Amino acid sequence: MKEQSITFPIAMSEMKESQKPILQVFKKNTVCAKCKMWIIKQKYANCVICEDAYHHNCMRPKQKEISKDWTCAHCIELKNTFPDTNDEEIDNVCQKCQKDVDSKDEEICTKCNKIFHKKCYGSKTISPICNLCHSQQPPKFVLNEKMNQLLNFSIPMTSSNLFILPCCVYDDKLRQNCFQSLQYALYCQNINFNDDLVYSSAKKELNNGYNEKLDPLIGKNLLTFKKYKQVTKIGFYGPLRVEYNLDQGFYVRSVQPLAYKTLICEYAGDVYRFADQVYSTSDSMMSLLETGFAATSLVIIPEKNGNIAKYLSGINNSKKNSKKMQQNVKSRRYNVEGQSRVILYACRDIKSGEILYYDYNEGEFKYNTNYFV
Image (cartoon, rainbow, N blue to C red; front, side, top):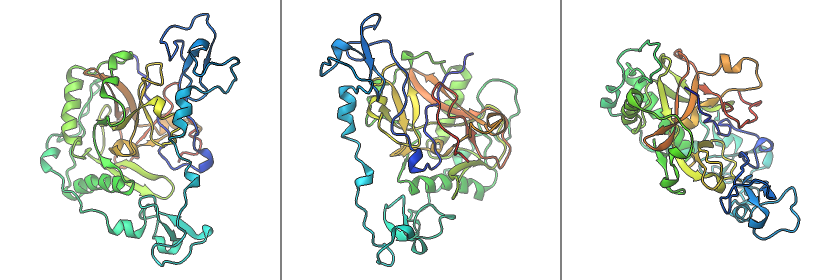
């Protein structure tokens, strides 16, 4: 069975400003994005932003000569909806001591976007947010213990190619810690927990899995996936804990062994048309559906809604043998009852204490991962 290309995310680790991509990359087309007719011998050009192809006669406004940096009307209009964050004014008064803050001694909280002196901010090695936000975090949710009983009670050791459920977490305190670690990470980034695809921007009807040659999820694999979703829909993902450090940011660690083919999670979040996100600099963009047109292709961006998938790390492709030595999770797109869904699973046996990594560059899209930890 042929593996499908599913990786189209941007780096999940923090990037320097100079490393942030200005534009996303999309494959070229041989069909006109305007009239939907094949381009055979007619003159045409690709938009430099979304890379959709247009007959010369279909361009609006009409062009006598086409420059190499020609931009389609949709992308020109869309650019005005993405504000330049560098022009935003930020109050330079420390929110704790109410004194002016010099640019060399400032820290900006990623949650409340307020400015602090470094000594007033708090320790970033403990928490990525300011002391004020950390102290105001909402009450911790209590895990429904019945959900843990749906998981395996022992670590399955099998050589079959079928998906399996993770083993339940035996220790009560550790189980609660795993559950609450995700809640805290989402709180720090102002993300609502949602274990499903959210269609607030794009229409759900656009996600037609039959518009692309994806392998269907059927039989026992489909039943296992549905059973696991009963557990993950309340925010519990088995023996996985979200942790934080200053160098890597948030990441996911296994606190118990995971066998090969164990389900990790579905990549969830807000669904957008790719054409509407060509200027996006999101650090968590994932390809959901690739139709050959930016206007009908879909991406997932977990910035308003998301789950634990946002915090899985990417391997450093520039390091020798990183794929062999570091990668332990694989992401793949399936046709699940007519819709494209992205599923992440263990691609080898994972030991307790391992950080979860997958390859952002398994498909045609090649992203610079040289600065990954």
